[in-house]
Amino acid sequence: MELIGSTLTATYSRPKTGHFLPAISTMASSYRNTQPALTMNPSANLWRSKSYFKSSNTVPSSASMHRDNLELVRAQTMFYPSNRTVLSTRYTPDDWYKSNQSNYMESESSRKSAERLRRDTMRLMQDKEQLTRRTQEKSSKNIGERLSDIVFWKSELSHEIDNMVTEIAALTEVKRRLERALAETEGPLQVSQECLYHREKRMSIDLVHDDVEKDLIKEVAMIKSCQERMRRYLDRAIAQLASDRAAQHELERDISDKVTAQRIDDRCHYLRNTSDGIGYYRGIERLDPSLSVPDSWCRFTDDNILHSQSERAASHKLRDEIEILLNTTSNEMWNQFNNVNVAFTNRISETSDAKNSLQTHLAKTLQEMYQTEMLIESLRKALKDKEYPLKVAQTRLEERTRRPNIELCRDNPHHSLVVEVREIEDTIQKLKERLMEAENALQILVKTKVTLEHDLSIKANSLFLEQEKCMSMRKSFPSMPRLVGYT
Image (cartoon, rainbow, N blue to C red; front, side, top):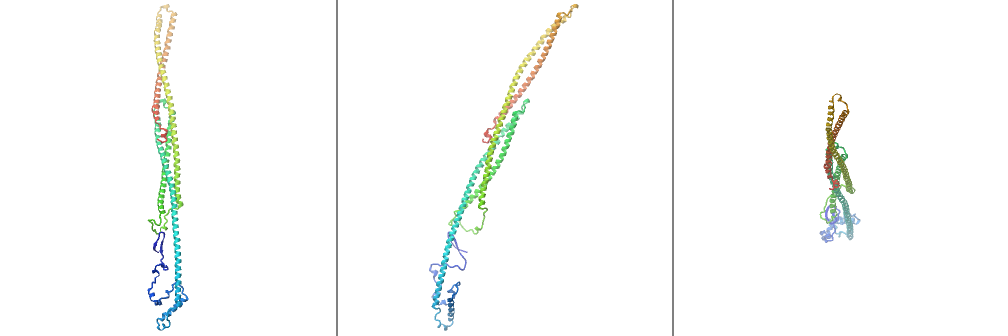
């Protein structure tokens, strides 16, 4: 087909066929006689065949057959001069009239056919023009509806992305708080372990498995348990953040594709027949590069949004669990910290009371030792004082043994001296026994004094470890806001 022209809305082409009628123009040249020779020489018509009067598609009638016979006869008379006088004319008036009538009828028929064709063609052109316009309007409307769908889903994606960005920021902040809280537990754990280490330096009887040690061991185990739970939730938060960012990436990629599609469809929606940049793309209507249908297209974006919402719900739940964990662990550590401090306070009070009691007993023991030493001195002096009376009595008895003969009599003085010696010796024996007892008591008192002094040093060491070492370290226990990761 040969392109012969184009309008604003349609393009026309001329069919390559032998039956296409030429255009009839109103100009004089369109109906001017194209056979000047025939006009100047009417006799030239004698040599025209019957196709001059009849078209090839017209069925021959009886008049035309008669005229053909006459033409044959008249053609023959030209070669026979003798016959020219017989036929003075070549056609009869009736032939001429019929020929004119035939031409009129054929012209009328041709005009009516052309007029009918023109009317049908104009109506076809108008119908096709309207159909083309309606189809183009429908396509524009469909593209506009598609743009509305893209704008709707883009707004949904944008809203979901904003929510996801907010959720990621919130989860990141909670994760940062959890990391700070986990770092803050290292100090209390080190303090508790240091307290146990320092309490191992207690001496002798004070190295007991008391409530303080039990609570310290419980505190160490509880802090390690809190750290383990925090690390587990920290790993979950890291994994959840990765899932949230993956969902956000899918949403951003989807909205980026929709922005591109919206730009393309918007440009297509505003294309007109007078727009620049339009052109022919042969066979483009047979190419179908689409990868989805409207249902799968909507379902894809809806699945992305639902997946993002699911991840946001899981992230929000995890944030709540982490908040509960931080509050729970901080309360547990603070309660155990207070329990240990109370146990330390009680133990320090008990140790201080024991130390004060030991000091009191030591003072009394020292006083008793002094008195015992004074007693020993008194006993020794008393023993020394008994030496001379014993010597006097024994000397008297020995001197009286020298009385001569009958004068050596057991008289009352002899019995009195014997009783006196025996009483003095018995007194000396009892005083020596008491002296020995006093010396033994003094030794016991000295041993008790040493024991009390050693015990006092033990108690002093225990008080130093618990008051100066342990309690001074435990003053630096993190506050509640620091344990939940706020500062």
